[in-house]
Length: 162
Image (tube, rainbow, N blue to C red; front, side):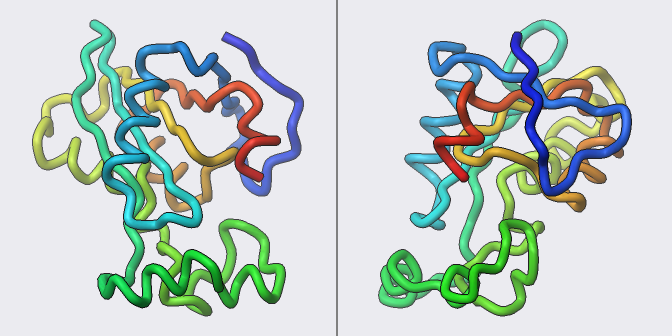
């Protein structure tokens, strides 16, 4: 596993992000989830949470707050946050098409974990995120709360998804 010296918009103290190649089976699964289930076609993300035995417990993708197909298609090409060059992770409330942290893949996967596997909360779990290059503070807070041990991104995510 590789670590990188990247300046993230947010990274909790004493935490690091690890990187794996696209061939990693968990990253491959996260990518499949993103491409199949994400309704945010501008920035599709997928997440898998894996236990110590290497079993995938839950999978989730980010979801747009918009449900209307016309508005979703419009948002794919036009976003007020992008127009005003608002950095990733900030001022989601400006654009109804941008997913708030509650709709992020990480957050949704953790909520699913809490519902389906409450006994796993607090155990050593790993999270694989495909489609983004960092995690926002609310997602990190939730990951730390449930005992996510390591967060893995795709090698080169800082260039691919920035």
